[in-house]
Image 1 (tube, rainbow, N blue to C red):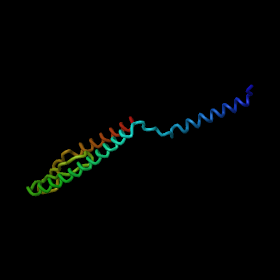
Image 2 (spheres, rainbow, N blue to C red):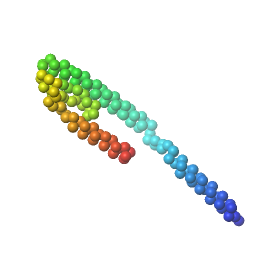
Image 3 (cartoon, rainbow, N blue to C red):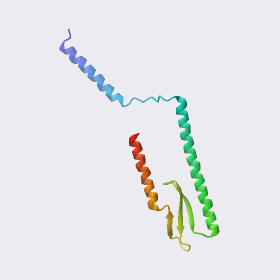
Image 4 (spheres, rainbow, N blue to C red):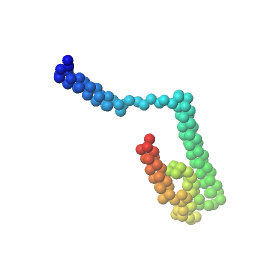
Length: 129
């Protein structure tokens, strides 16, 4: 026959065990069940994407330098530059006798809008992930 004291001790032990399980549940690492070959291929693809992006960025920077040199040679006031916020080339049209900017393509507003849209999309994906 189980007495009241044994029931209380048993209940306390179960409660303590449950509390410990709940507290440690957030620390349990989720095991990646994908085959190692698939994980390796995904990691390789991600690395290649980063490298391709860096290479494209460098090519665009080099292209903008060449275009600027050519524009100086023909005497026009067009300036090409790489913009990391879009990422891509930006064209600036200036007055011929001054540094006054006539037009920027894309405009500062469009660049800021694209930057904010990327931030919002990033927040959405972070919350979904």
